[in-house]
Length: 466
Image (cartoon, helix red, strand yellow):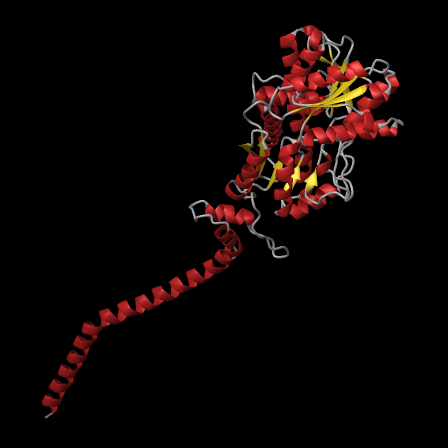
């Protein structure tokens, strides 16, 4: 019995060992799996806060219609708002770029105006970009060709806003096109900065919130030249006629002449206006009317013509009247496009160019100020072979004012912030010889008018209009 008991015990123990061997491996593998799963859960939990910090930026990208990409996390991190100040989507602004648009005549009879304005802005943008941009963002300008026609301007503004998604427009060229472009921008609360026009419609009182002008107005340009003709050249106000484009541009310039003559005690109802149609050089009717009027004015003939034109029409008018009326004084506002105008006149002959006066809203391009020298260096670097020009200089100056405001604004950029920054911009010195200042009731930065006169070589020389 003792022997049998021992045999049973040994057999039972052997069975237990065998069972342990059979089931030990699966139990160990299960334990390892549980340990691995717990470790994996802990690693994933550590990643959650970092991913959550990108959620607001990811939302921004999604609402703007941007597709995710491999580089998205880095861009999103740059755009991530601070906890105190949530950031929303801003049209035309990314982590690396600010897009602006320009609607101008890039083709057609006045293409030199649009092309030169665009060059000046791009040159200034490129200088800023080469130095790292504005708060790490590169500046980009998208051009849209409106041909200096209002109907086309309606389409180009829509293209810039809807398709190109620009932050704002800068340097738009022309008054008749602004009649269409300006309401479009205002309705959408889009910045309308530094337009190449001195028209009153961009200078409301009080000013439209989203419109900022760099340049002097046509009223200021024409007032300066009318005072010069009356006070310096000793003309009777009735001896001054106006040759003007028959549209909002011409109307604005004519209104400036009329206001200046009233201020001098003259009768603005007697001012002779000689018209021509936009984008043409058909000046025959204007010439015929001048001839008819001169026959009536034996005692006080017309001695000066203030022109509010485009350059080709102005040159044609001078060509057809210069020899008929020797000694006639011809003046023009800055929108004429000074360099293109001088070139047109010199093609006719130096006698047509000599003595022609053009008021300017920027300093003389033949000067040696730091501003003009920097402009020439930028133009030579980014547009080699292009000659310095008053229009491209204006684009360069206006763009530099905008760049200064963008820098002062700080990295958190939207239209309302930038408008507030511009309205706080005081005594900005960019080398003009006069400070640039804006305010809540002042959306025109500069009021100075420079006088220039063509010599026999086709170069503009400074003259004192006082």
